[in-house]
Image (cartoon, rainbow, N blue to C red; front, side, top):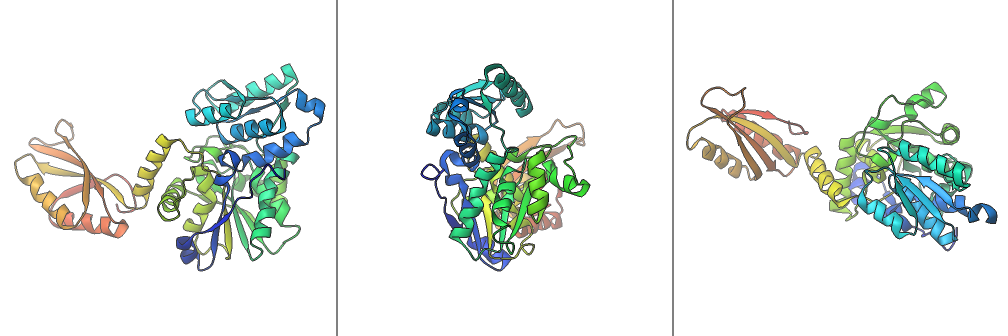
Amino acid sequence: MAGVLRTTPLQPVRPLAEAIGGPAYLKCEQLQHGGSFKVRGALCRIARLTPAERARGVVAASAGNHAQGVALAAERLGARATVFMPAGAPLPKVAATQGYGATVELVGATVEDALTAARAYAERTGAVFVHPFDHPDVIAGQGTIGLEILAQYPEVRTILVAVGGGGLLSGVAAAVKPVRPDVKVFGVQAAGAAAYPPSLAAGTPVSLDRYATIADGIAVGRPGDLTFQHVRTYADGVVTVSDEDISRTLLLLLERSKIVAEPAGAAGVAALQAFPHGFEPPVVAVLSGGNIDPLLLVKQIEYGLTAAGRYLRFTVLFPDRPGVLASMLDIVAAQRANILDVLHQRRDPRLALGEVAVDFSVETRGPDHARDLLATLRSAGYRITTTRGPAT
């Protein structure tokens, strides 16, 4: 793999260091070829194929990062790659996969549909199926991140890794723990797709009945059989973070570190914000990917502003007469809040006769400012309901 992979840098993050009371670094895998760590496992897997196997080509299924990793690795090693992706896969990820020379087939609505099609293609053509996480060579390739961290920062005491199927956590933990048992390695899952905590409690992989999270790259409903054994043997535990934790982290990375990350890529970092005193510093959090659709990025920024109390939505019920709204706006201006949108509703059947509901979207300086604004308005006699966010 030497000469093909990029040794990604460690970047300090001052706000996180201040929060945890010690050094905090990011392992910047969003700067890896293909925009994520996935090329490591794909490269190791394809490089270890025999010449005859490689001549038959490789096939994979993915909604994004694994697709790009396999396509890039195959291109570098001279193998033909076919990648099955869901019909609704983000267009930038489809285009990037094709740009690395892979043939892309859009099938079904889910990654599971794409996996079924990819396995059928492998049986039909003899192409080698490259699993996204549950294979020894894939795990070994991801483990090179752990070796790089130890070489770059021997003082590290804790490593945080995002977890979906478990290939990245398996590789990093298996590479680090035998040579540095003093270093803690934790996995971080999105709470809405956290299959590892119940699986570890049961001692065997457990399938989730349903799962949903903004971190689609780690939205996996069941641990791999092989990765589960690695995680149970080597990792020090798996914690969960909420979608709001992840969104706040995306906003922090963008504002303070000038880093564009995808939700799944930021999950490991989010644990430092969610549990600032839960890990022994110095800490290295693996920022595992930065492939995010620009349209999704816009939505994530708005969601993150709301989660951080910087973007407040509320509704005020007014008597429908001139001047009432203007008086309230004077209060908002005096509180130095910035109104982004105003929407009048006069036809809601829940409104009394002669009453109007006005929806506001307001930019604030943070949760304290938002709470002060709402308290001031309520003390002035305005009837207010809020939608969501810490300021409510």
